[in-house]
Image (cartoon, rainbow over all chains, first blue to last red; front, side):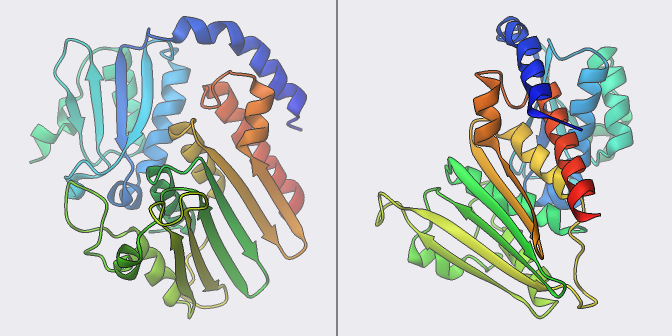
Length: 122
Length: 184
C-alpha cells in the first residue's frame, strides 16, 4: 500500500540531492505534446524517456520536458534533443521502442540514431 | 484519439497554457453516462473567441492555423449522442474570477464511446510537464470516488519538486492502487 509516510521518506531522501541537480543538467529532451503529438502517441514516448533517463542513471545530466506544436504534425511524435555545444537533433515518428533506443544510444552512448532523425525520414 | 484520457491530456494543456494555477479534472460516471468537466482559473476567453472555439480554424498555436483539440473532444462526445459545453470568463472583463469550464458528456453505452483508457498516465504526464501549477483530480463512479490534489502532495514534499522521478512514480503507483481498491 502506498502511504503518505512513504512520500515523506522520498522527500527526506531527495531533499539534499535537489540542490546538487540545479544547473547541472546539460541535455534537454523535448517531446511535442500538442494535439498532434498526443494523438500520434507522444504520451508513452514521454513516459519512456522519463523511465529510461532514470534507469540509465542520467537524471543528473538530462531533463525531459514537454512543448507545444513544433509545426511538423505529420512527423509526430517528435522528440528534440538539445546538448550544449552541439547541434539540435530532431527525431520523428518516435514510439516507445525507438525512445528506448534513443535513450540508450544517444543519451547514454553519445551516438545519434541516424535512421530515426528527420533527415533520414524526409 | 484512441483514449478519452488523451483528450483530457490535450484539453488540460490548454488550461495550463492559459496560465491556470489550478485545474480541476472531474470525471463523473454512472452506469450509462460519463461527464468530463475540466475547470481552470486561467485567463479565460473573450465571448468572440468562445463563439468560434469549436471551429478547427480557431487555434492558439502559432505554428499553424488549425487547432483540433476542442473539435476532437466535441466529435468524440457527439458521436455518442452527448455534447460539449464551454463557458468562460475572460480576465479582461472578470479580473477576479476568470477561467474556463469545458464540460463534455458521453453516453457510455453507445457503440462509438471512446474508452477512458489510461487516465493515471495522463495525470502523471501533466504533473511531470507542469510541476509549477496545481491539479485537482476527481473521479466518481456511482458512489465511489478518487480524489487527488497536487497541493496536498506539495505540502508533504516541502520544496522537493513534484516532478522528481521518485515522486512521479509514487503518484502513479498510488493512483493505480486507488483504482484497484475502489473500482475493482
